[in-house]
Amino acid sequence: MADHLIAIGALVLIFTISTFTSVHMGALALVAAFAVGSSVAGESADDVFGGFPGDLFVVLVGVTFLFAIAKNNGTIEWLVHAATRAVRGRIALIPWVMFLITAALTAVGAVVPAAVGVIAPIGMSFCARYGISPLLMGLLVINGASAGGFSPASVFGSITNGVVERNDLPGSPGLLFLMSFLFNVALSVVAYFLFGGRHLLGRRASDTAEAPGGAGTGTGTGTGTGTGTEGAGAGGGILSGGPASANPSAPAPAPTATVAPATTEAVALRLDRSRVLTLLGLLGMVAGALFLDYNVGLMAFTVVVVLTLVDPDAAQGTVDRCAWSTVLLVCGVVTFVGVMERMGTITWLGDSVAKIDSPLLGALLICLIGAVVSAFASTTGILGALIPLAVPFLMDGQVGAVGLIIALAVSSSVVDSSPLSTSGALVTANAPEEVRLQVFGSLMKWGMSMALIAPLATWALFVVPGQG
Image (tube, rainbow, N blue to C red; front, side, top):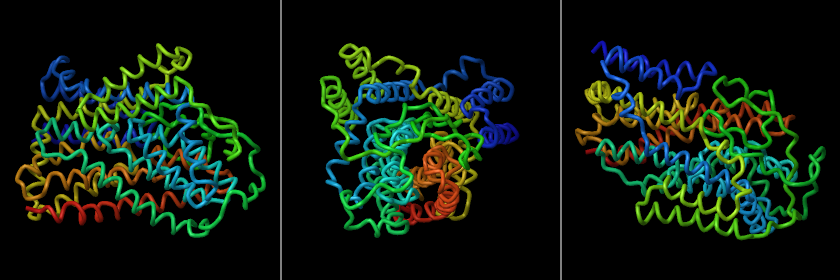
């Protein structure tokens, strides 16, 4: 028992220290794996590295490498402009376009904060031009990222489905994606009407003058994929200082010029050979993951090699913009969890939760832990750590495994709207300076309320109906 308590204490320390200091969670997890594995579990270095997730390493590097090229060759910018032109100036639809674009990016493999880092500056530029609430825009961008985040080709989806598969649990990647998407759509509808969406109905871009003090002309498309705490955070338009810096574990803000508002009269980007191949590669990657069960990472590397041969200039500097921070975070946490599994700590802790008289209460407790911790720490790390803890609890069959996994995944991701998380910090940093404090406070209230509401809602929707 003492060994198990030491391992659990180390896991708590990993999340606590990384939340309140600038020490990287992945690095802490690797140190903990070495320290606990060698001194408590009596493992060699080879044993410790045996738990290193090589499959996730390939997925994370491959998809972020591909998106760095897509950003370089203008494919992402083309997609954004094409989508906004499609609404034909209907201002009420612009936040939903940002929702769908962000969801599409994460669904095909973009790291969640990377997608937010690219789209948030663009969305905020529409706010400045058309009088849209920055809070409304920010929430729809964050929720969009979470909505697409659990597709089989996405990072969150790959992590969750991989943990489920490795632990021989029943899983349904398609149902996980669908339920997560629908939950975030419903959440966004609530946010839309709570935070000013009703006032946008019926308005058109041609009827709206640019807000005073606008930032000139041009388009704000961000400056890169970024490598913040969760693998992004260096998207364009991040401003230094401000309330977002309250979180020591959030990505260090990089000073940039003011983001200029996007304009409907901007010159349309042309679909050249490189962009067409990129779009075909992204579609092929999604189709291969959904219908042929191909490895997402290996498909992404295949597309990367083809695009690099076709357009070498677009690949310049892209290796540096791979989500190395996320790679370290995920691989570090999963490696440490592997040590805990071999020690029997995961089984012991899961058995302890399973001994709670009410299985439903135990399931709710797991979801609450995931939501509260994720609001302050890494969603990516939480997904890799908490699902294995629930494995023994699920083995007795009193609670449906698929339902609890969906509830835990959704509960741990919708709290990313907290300004103490990476996505929330990115939205706060990109909000207009004059309302940044208000956006920070509103996101804090919304994120903390989600940490309580989301577990209860997902528990009632997905866990209670599946009780054995």
